[in-house]
Length: 464
Image (cartoon, rainbow, N blue to C red):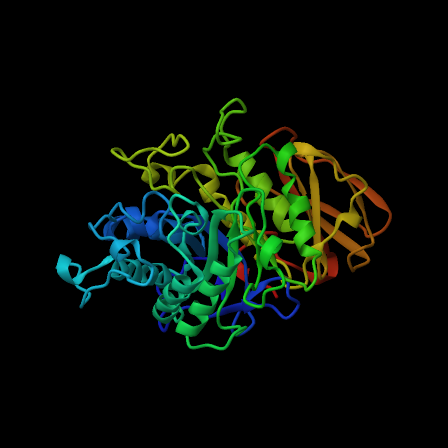
């Protein structure tokens, strides 16, 4: 695999993903590193027709996303409001009765049902090199007293239906759906059992990749860290100002839990959402807010990162009831700045040895707090330090290999790298960035000079 042009077709299907041997990352079945670069598209199956779905997926493929997160039983009245083709997912809101019809003919409404449309969208994503982070249901249908439809018994049946239908496609299973887990564990565990049974794979098989999407501020580790079916932890660091979230601390906490499991922020602050969600007193989040969460959390130890836009997750369009104040239509929002900047983080990570990377706070004299926070990570012969507002970095040298280091500034806004110079790899050295201020974030890259790495973020083969 290499980082360059997006994959437009994948004959024979996408490679299966599994947890790496060191339990920190995801890799393909052949051991190639996989950086989870996801978009949040919760209402994808529910609100977009075939043409719209293809447009969305083609755009995200060009932007080098390799995962989209979408919900089968959608949040926004997904049980009673038909999809773009006029179909519902269940008969009488009964999880044991998926509404399926004979055939799969999009030109014949009687032979093209809700699940045929889900099939189509997943296949189109996979053709473009994109895995689907598939949520079987939004959490409201499990936990909310007025709307819940699930019990452990019918969750197991529904899970078996999904496992049989989708386990052999390019899918990452994401249970949960923005709700607290205490009290609902039996339902989610039964659903996981059903998926495994439907997929005809043994429990704990590394051919199924499963996680859990928690409530805002929460983590899957709260309820399921010891469960064998939970392959990696997912956080929702949420939609708040940094002083309230400090998401890097949350990532570090799950990173240090035993048994060792990878961790991911599956829902950070969305671009174009009111900070704190319910009030715009802090203004709206834009690309600089999103980038800070990405780099802080990945450098703190996350296996990858998720992006979201407040218009895109809900596929907002004229005539639809808005949720949490979208300011653009979904199609307009596809080209927002942060949506085009995630690829730079992916390219940076893939341009250095991937599977050896660990958090490296010991390299910093001062991590700083709030929006100025500095976060460091290192691997075999290199280190990255993210400066959230471009503040000076006082770096302890001699921690990575090499008698000399080559230093670079990497620009998270453009993906360009500027060489600073070559220095002895010893003592402590101050690095002053090209510019400071909110929105002037930078990554300091230092390399063991003898490794002869390519420029940070430059195209080339994946580096293990």
